[in-house]
Length: 163
Figure (cartoon, rainbow, N blue to C red):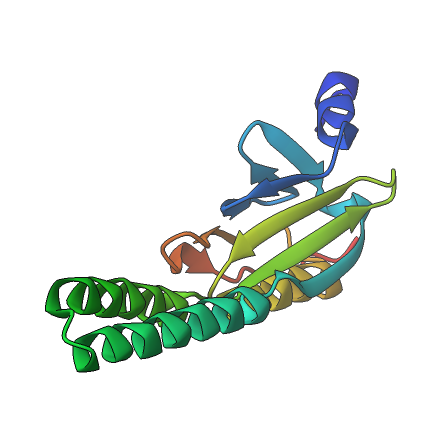
């Protein structure tokens, strides 16, 4: 059972977490605890798109590569190679960027908690696990989702408990 201090701590602000522990009747994220009965809405969002940043880095890398090739053609081997090296680094950085996704859990008291990660499928699986737990009135299933390294620990779906 949650006491008033725990509920006040959870309702303080919108925060982002990388790990979600689903217990029998509560969700835990860091020091925050949320009663499953108080969940009002679950949603997958995409708050951090890397597309614009990726595009800008590719354009800048391409321009630097052209300038480096121009330097090489004009006889400046040192500056040309340096520009090509920087251009290659920018292009590599652009291609390694990943989109950020978030599982947002809203509660009846108006607070929102976001769990962020680059693996959208894992976030969807966490949302479906919580939804199934609510729909089945399941008080025995437990698991821990780590969105930072895309792992699920101790996943088990329990029996339905009817009141």
